[in-house]
Each structure stands twice: as structure tokens, then as C-alpha cells.
Amino acid sequence: MGTELLLGLLALVASLMAAIVGFGGGMMLIAVMPQFFAPSLVIPIHAVTQIASNVSRVAFSFSDVRWSFFYAFFIGSVAGICLFGLLLFNIPTHYIPLAIGIYILLKTWCQQFLRIIEEYENLYLLGFLQTGLGIVVGSTGPLALSYLANKLTDRNQIIATSAMFMTFSHVAKIPIFGMIGVSLWEHKTVVLIMVAGSVMGSWLGTKIRRKFNNERLLLAIKWLLTALAINMIARVLL
Image (tube, rainbow, N blue to C red; front, side):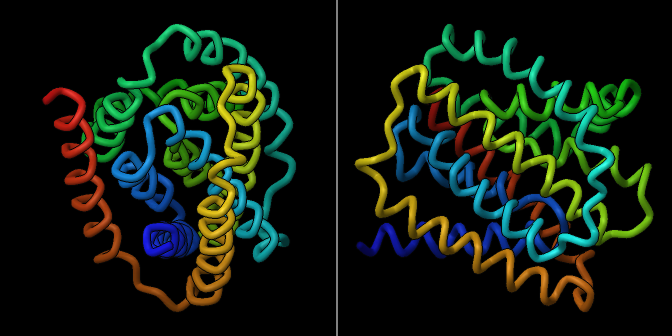
């Protein structure tokens, strides 16, 4: 039970972080989860936890969500599910943590990687990449933030709309993993505890978002994600 409570606390902290600054929580959580779960379970359990985190974030900031952005994002997402879903059937699950670690490092530190994405970004492409890549690497929330930051000026709208995108991206993974035979029923206790932690983190983070100076936290998140990503890569390669 101690492990389940620890994972619930980690889910709370991750959701709190995401609710305050808009990113980093899901990436931090998925970077830690390979220490506790088999590779084939990491992304499905992470998806369920993040559905709770993002749905609750949307609910607590409902008036800030820009719903008009969803339709083009949805169309791109469907295409991403089809292409990356096929890819998932043909890669060994052992290498999923390696893909996650490389993705985190590129997204955190590689400006050229960000520029390539930003140069061609639109809602259709955003949906395609965020939902499609999410099936393979788990947490792709930061992809939306650069696009939304260029379109919106209110931080609360950016975070709430990104949470709406991520809700759909994570929901879309569930049928894919069901098709390849992943069952979470035997892990229902830890999943429920992590879901509860995620909802509580969203509530707390939404409450303090407008009062929080997040510059130092953003830097700390970057270095924490870097350390976790390197550890994930090393565990696979070594």
C-alpha cells in the first residue's frame, strides 16, 4: 500500500505542477513510472491518470477554455491515432521508455526541434502530432503550449485550452491499448489512488495559479525532467 500512496502523491504533485504552469507534470510523472510498472503498462496507466488530471483542470477552469479550437484539433488527432496506432503494433514495448526519454530531452532543450515544430504548426498538425505521438511517448502536452501562446494572451486560457486538448489525446489512447490486450483491472487500486491524487492536484493548482510566480519553478522543472530522462535512457541502454 505504501507504493500506491507514493504514486498517488506523485500524481498529485504532477497535476499540481501542470495546473500552475501548464506543462511538465505529465512528463515528470511518466518519467518516474517505469520505476514502478512494466513498460507495457506505463502509457496506459499514465493515460488514465492524465485524463483525470486534465478533465478536472478543464472543469475547474471551464470558462477559460477556447472550445472553438477543438474541431480542427480533433480532425488532426484522428489521423494521428491511425498512423501512430499502427506504429505501436510494430515496436517492442521495452524501448518505450527510451522514446520517452529522448522526447523529453528534445522538447526541453533542443531549440531547433522546437523551431521545426513551430514553423509548420497549425491545429490540424498539432492534433496529429500531439495525439499520435502521445500513443508512443505518453506525454505530449508541451506541444500545444507554444501554439496556444502565439494565439492567446491570457495564461489561464492557454492552460485550460491545453488541458482540453490533452483530455482528448489521452482518451484516444484507451481503445488502442485495449486492442493490443492491455488490461488495467488488476491494477485498479493504484489507478484509483493516482486518479484521486490527480484531481486533488488540479484543484489546488487552479486555486494558486494566479498568485504564483513560476519563473524559478520552470527552471527547476527543466532540470528535474532532464535528470529523469537521462535515467530512463540509461536504464534501457545499460
